[in-house]
Length: 307
Image 1 (tube, rainbow, N blue to C red):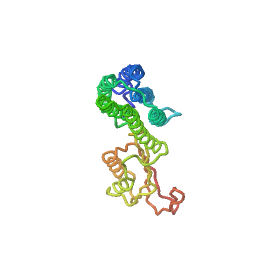
Image 2: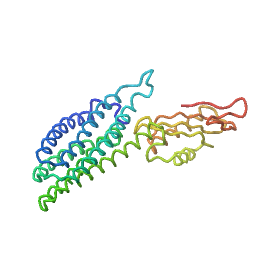
Image 3: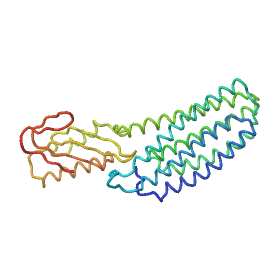
């Protein structure tokens, strides 16, 4: 994650401002939703409450990620942000099912809705969520910040839908539109939550980073002059944007001073093409056999480690 040196910088400042504004809007949504008898507004309050928790967890994760590695946390605290994103996403899924339940109940027993209040409060929400989403956009490469960013994008879209629904209720007097909007908001929350769950679990399970093809990484290494073979290749994520790689590379029986050039070329290619900067590369210049993921040299001499 590219936030490890910015705990006091832009992302944390944006998150603090977003927290304050979101909390104020939640209070407005709850009061207005109760007064207007609008489940859509109360659903938006639930949606924004999950956003508030997302922003709070993300802010905490930013500070944790800024902490340097230690003897007990040799990779630092990059995965604090991943864990925060996972908690955020699970909370989104829970909120969506609560909204589905209440919307179904309202369909059975419709309540008269004050559409004018819905429209006014939702319009304020569109402006607020749109501004916060724009502020978070530059940091959205990080899964932790991106989870908060997606929350805000989802809020902007769903709140805009509430405005449309308010106009429909004003024009037709059909109160069921409020519950229908709530189902739509719940579906949007569920979709965004599952997406973040999938990505965070992939990181925690040390899967290949999102959007990266292992075959392309292997082909790029094989294309380096002096590389004869690549095997035991592993690529995983320490954080959402901090990737690591380990592999075994077969080269000719050459002096270490010459093999250093190959190592530099491999590292440069990995950095430029795949943004992989944390590498553990073992050079070998003997015939090898693969057993349980480990390389067993055939012979008594001949393989060297370079990192």
